[in-house]
Length: 188
Image (tube, rainbow, N blue to C red; front, top):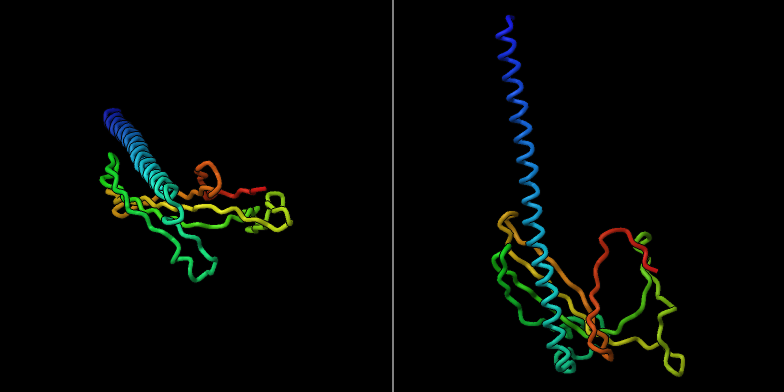
């Protein structure tokens, strides 16, 4: 092979390598753009789910006896004492329309320790409240669950975010949000 043919093939290979590097950089940046778009959508969904909780708490605390009746504690009747609040519809920039569904109920809280590594839950004796006679008193709380959903153009389906919270019945209306663990945690 003469020098001109070698230089031509070497030049073409070099151009091919540069084109592949440029295409790789372009694809990597496109992935970052998708991540940013997904983050914005997920952030708006989580905010919408939290908004459902705030709205339901306001409605429930205005008249708790009527909105969330007492549950006598029979397992089969629980669905009769759950209250589904009106759906919220929120306009979004990243997602067209977000629909928020919220449910609430009155429950007695039991303090538990949960070890997510061993999947064991035991009653937390240090946090048990007792009355004057030494009998265990379970705090009454209003528990709320909210789910925000929207159609995803990119994933061709629905995406969801949820929120859990409770408000103690004889407290100052502080909303205690509960998050499900995202990894292996040990709660003590």
